[in-house]
View (cartoon, rainbow, N blue to C red):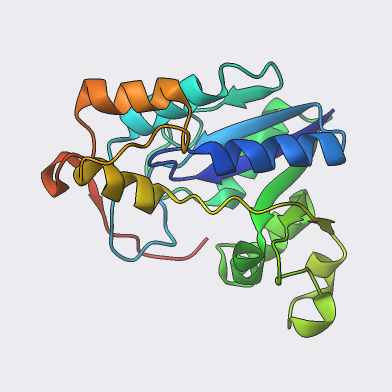
Length: 211
């Protein structure tokens, strides 16, 4: 079984996340895509993030309309920073016969050598790298380990310029987030009063390491 993995803070998840996951699923014949909200993103040195419960609930609601999408609490339930290598080890133990594909962007693939135990991350999975206009995957331009370059699958697709940061800002300013994120997420944000002020974003996370 081929399983795509899309991890992130998802604060909140938005339509660009969902679009790129579906694009990767179709283009590379993935059986499922697993969305994994992280608990303590270690790559953030100082980042204000909403409670894990809210981010998981929003992600679960957002993927509910696609039978090939699933949401996992594997990182939220594990204490400490969300290291990708630990998540991969747990997934391989649970799904030993599955091939894992990390769905990510060009900016993230460049950071992988700085992650926690990067050699093991590279060995355990392949990488579907979403390109965008003007930023195509060109391994000759990057100083990356050969083992990583060999495991990259480029994904040429359209780019949706949506960010979680902009959605949070729009909510605080009283602007609509409709059509930027699924309607069920818009309703959840309103119901729980998320992002209406800086004080509504809780759980200040100070990451300590990369990866």
